[in-house]
Length: 240
Image 1 (cartoon, rainbow, N blue to C red):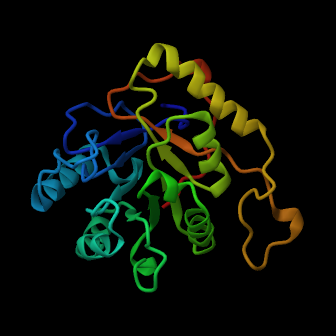
Image 2: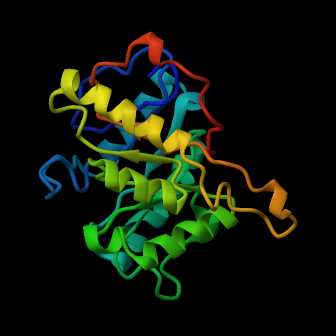
Image 3: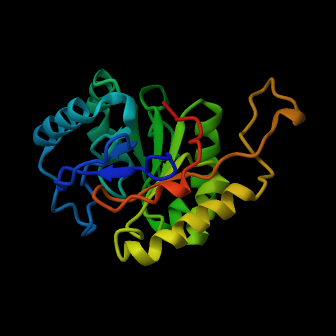
């Protein structure tokens, strides 16, 4: 974690301490480990928790904080999230917006109000062509992209292909001694494989400007054991 290859995903339901110097991101527990949102504490309690977390660990280490959403409901997510995106930014951290099935319909993505597009929604949607197109659009707009529920080598590869800056999953939390070497190997494989896209170029970029992009940073839940120092390497640029 100190190398920047792994960070911590924390939620209102967790009491785990974020390791010193580690990057972290703040989920909202609207989906939760049960997939039903039973750990969602309510909007005011969530924001109080978020404020305390940012105050304790600092805004500079926070990759983003996810605004409240309505899982699998694009219109409901827009209504739920809009009042909170600016308040998240006022804490000094990037505001993430959960992209759900159907969010590509006109008016359902508040591009000017978000800093990170969080690929939520159903598994079929988040791995499909619409999510890919929106990911690439987010990058051209200068936004970050995150994919949730990434627990396999193949899905991590899809996140990398979409241009995601980070991904989260519980793979490392279940059997960390066994799964940590596998996860680091996945990251090594992606880091060593040239991308045909690299960093998506701006309209003024030339073909020679397209370079190999680092794989997405993986965010296991806070409290998961950190990798050994021997795995350290310089972290890539952060998305703000």
